[in-house]
Amino acid sequence: MILIFGGAYQGKLNYAKANFNVDTIWDCSAGAVPNFEADCICGIEGYVMECAKSGEDPRKYFEENRALWQDSVLVVTDTSQGVVPIDRTVREFREMNGRLLLWLAGEADRVIRVFCGIGKDMK
Image 1: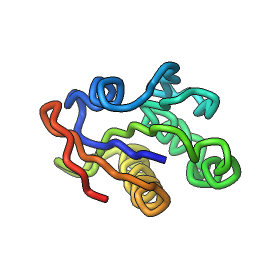
Image 2: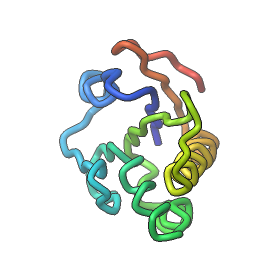
Image 3: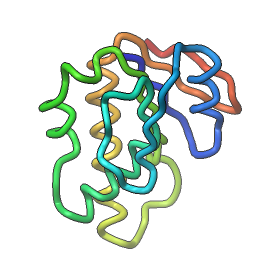
Image 4: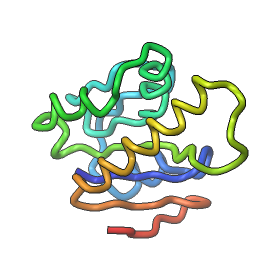
């Protein structure tokens, strides 16, 4: 699995399309559950937000479906920067998203941080 992360609007999906064999894309940014039949699953932070609202652990879904995303490109926005939100759900979302990113990075064959459209190999 290839994990691509970075800040919002930094060109993560365009980087994935330009550098990897991505034919099908599943967008989770509106909160959809990841569909691991796609080559690239993007906007995973949207799914994490829905998990924060419902009190579910997003990592559990990824663990249960591990075999399905081993050959995928996963694209996640890093939400760990900036002012800590006052809203409890948003704070929980940021923590969940960070913990999921940490775990996915450990599972990934390759980790790439994208900033201003430029990818930097982290692993």
